[in-house]
Amino acid sequence: MRTISLRRALPLIIILLALAALPLGANGYILGVLTTAFYFAVFAMSWDLLFGYAGEVNFGPTFLIGLGAYGAGMANALLHAPVPLAILIGAIVAVAGGVALAIPALRLSGPYLGLITLVAVLLLQQAIVIFAGVTGGEIGLSVPDVLSIDSGPNYEYALAFMIISGLVLSIVARSSLGMILQAAGQDKIAAAALGFNATKHKIMAFAISALFSGLAGALLVFYLGTASVSAVVDVSIGVRVIIAAVLGGRRTIIGGAIGAIFLIVAGELLRPIGQLSTFVVALIALIVIVILPDGLLGLLPSRRGA
Amino acid sequence: MLALQILIDGFAISTLYALGALGFTLIFGVSGVLNLAHGGLLVVAAMIAWYVGTSLGHGAYWGALAGLGAAIVASLLTYGGVVRPIERSRAIPPRERELFVLTATLLWGVMIQEALAYAFTNSPVTVKPLIAGTINILGVRTPINELLIAIIAWAVMGCLWLLVNRTKIGKRLLAASINPRALTLLGFELGTIYLVVWLIYGVLAGIAGVLLGSFLGTGSDYIPDLTGSAFTIVVLGGLGSVSGTLMAAYVVGYIETLTAYLISPSLRDVPALILLIIVLYVRPQGLLGRR
Image 1 (spheres, rainbow over the protein chains, first blue to last red):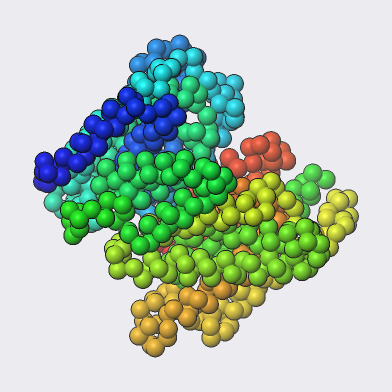
Image 2 (cartoon, chains in turn orange, red; image 1 turned 30 degrees about the vertical axis):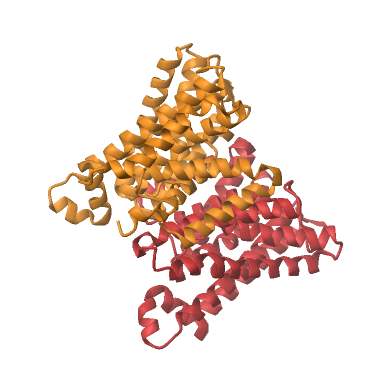
């Protein structure tokens, strides 16, 4: 089992402390951008657990995110559940969705599973539009409660949530669960012959990934004050999550966070060039993927040859 | 009357779906690439056809020709600029090449979408039909364009069949899809064969894109949906199986038309998606797929 050496963790801790101190000096706009980026970072890290470790091609991260977001939003708006309870309900709904998604994953792999996960997103999107009476449909569902109206606390919640999620996901990925997932992903039969129950571990991986995706989706709803298809379900959001994870460096967990923050901040910095900003971000991501397949984290000398 | 209307409309849309998905399945069958920028190529063809034909006013035929040329260029760019660098990269482990191609083509599709929206417009446009006007088939007013689309699509598919089954180039393509290594050992340059496939793919996508644009309209925002439809049809039929793709295209086309006419146009995608999930549970390799 790899241990995290202090020398390697130190720069990370310094960066995180600097981020935590940011509300003292930065304005609300910068904090707002980073708050969204932190939730996105959790989406990408959860996705990386499924793809990087379990080798499952999940094209529909927004299925899990959307279930968490709408579960929490509807619990708050319709059942008047207080925010913490609503977030819990969202997380439970997402985990149920994750387990449901794990069932086809046991039989299918590669592009077939990719398509099923994509279809799951499209069906969720249709369901939201069809049951517009309770979901708010295409306009979106506004929730009565929010986490906080100040950008400072919102920022700190998101940062804390990202750090905790990153830690837990890293520990899971480095634990025996992560190892068995990698082994089963590379050679299912050999892993089974060694006595590992790949089915159980895969369902676990889906459930954990869903738990964090759902929590992040739910928190995002209470940050934005609204749950809408374009913010948490749309396929293009899922595409960005995948790009973030691959861009940062797959099979690293933390790479997802770096990629997500990079994508969102780059998108904001490029806002002055208007319509072309998405084009440029996609181009940068494409170049990184082709030239540096290990992602941005692959640039760090300590990871070379790892 | 309604039944005949559904029969005719469903036939036209299904034939278009078949042609649109055929290139996707061909590229996968021969070179193992799932091109998630597929919708992008279709829309490039349609947008250029609209721009040259309608905006610049050169007429439907020059427009269609320009659209076809644009799709061929876009297809070769996809291969040379995106797919080939990944396949040649030593840094990417072979086991993960598939995901890298998927991610990279996805990004490429986003770039095409944004570039088209920036260069032209992101609001939907309609490509001028090659022949305007309508005819009456047993009391159903049908645009001549709809018939023409079905005829052209079937003619193109027939040509492709002849090319694959009756020519030397076609036999090489077939061989590349069955055992690329053996083909290399026999002294054929795999790179040339892939180039030919991407060229054919460009032609297919170009024709399909222009026809789609004249039937359903087009726009940069259509790209993800078109990729999704092609992906659905191809997986439903069985990846890499041409006859499976044709069958699936008609199944999906008719289910969508039936839903749109009999239930509600807003639900037209849903039954096909549910069917796809059921088929993949029962028969993961699709209707006619090889395992």
